[in-house]
Length: 99
Image (cartoon, rainbow, N blue to C red):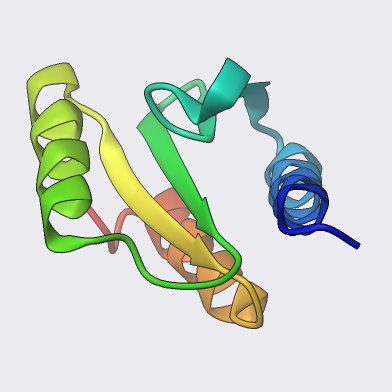
């Protein structure tokens, strides 16, 4: 399987997880500006960067953090192999512990 395909499959897993938790999820074309945007009433918008192979560069992370701050959104990084941790972050956000 090619890297692009593996990355896309991982994005779909993250998308499906968010949908199962009641979010409306948009997958952005060419991952611009982020991979996924998740919306749910009563919860700040979530910008999701999915990483299958390596962490985002410092520059990319700063860009994402600035985007989240300007839009009033929460930035979450979903890493392959750490989906349980990502789910815990979402649960914390839903319970108001991660704001």
